[in-house]
Image 1 (cartoon, helix red, strand yellow):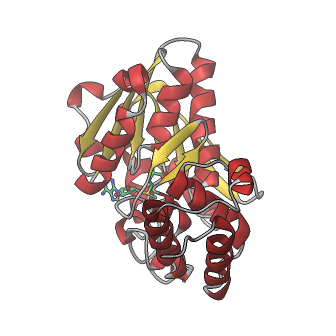
Image 2: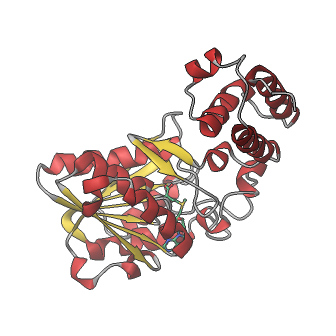
Length: 287
Ligand SMILES: C[S@@+](CC[C@H](N)C(=O)[O-])C[C@H]1O[C@@H](n2cnc3c(N)ncnc32)[C@H](O)[C@@H]1O
């Protein structure tokens, strides 16, 4: 059996990803080779004329084949970065997005501004991205209650919690429908409620890589896209302290309607913050 050199494997992989229409095949292939071999991109360059082991070839071929069928890179790699974290992700959860890093940052800033220990709630935690970021960046000054209706998503969040070390003790994971998952004793005690709920309208057309692979229940709440945001905004007042803050990720066309919802729910102020691309992305409402 002739040995396969990494140079040849890399060129074949590049051709497969290019044929599949992947936007940046060079960059993606570096990450795929890193996942298959444990070699950093600079080590990969030095190893181009070295033979690959049978195990490496099998793992590499499998990852390239998955990516070439259109599976999102993040699921293929099985992990993705979110703020300071490296999270496990698979098809049971939404892939954490850069715009959600901004939303988490707004919640973290609110907690920091309190200047004391805080209670935070992350509704619809998915991979645990927001809850874990809050705990990682505000530990030991925060207690985070993270909920999701999907037991599958909570299993991923639990696995991510295991990688957080001592800071994981700040987080409780609970299954249930929005606020119904929380213990009654938290009513009126929460400093910050943060959520990235599903907010895509059923009629919106999503990219194939999103629609075909990510969980629909994490994306589309119903015909208008506002169905879950309405519940989260309307019930927040029962759980927040009198000075509490609600931070909710929204769709870029939903700003006016969510501000109206917040005013109707009795919030004294409601502003919308942009994401890194300048699109309306987060409601911040104060009681
Ligand atoms: C857009 S994803 C956000 C996931 C994660 N917070 C993030 O930002 O990457 C929405 C999450 O809400 C959860 N979800 C959907 N309906 C829910 C409900 N009725 N109650 C609680 N969580 C729900 C989904 O399972 C999903 O994990």
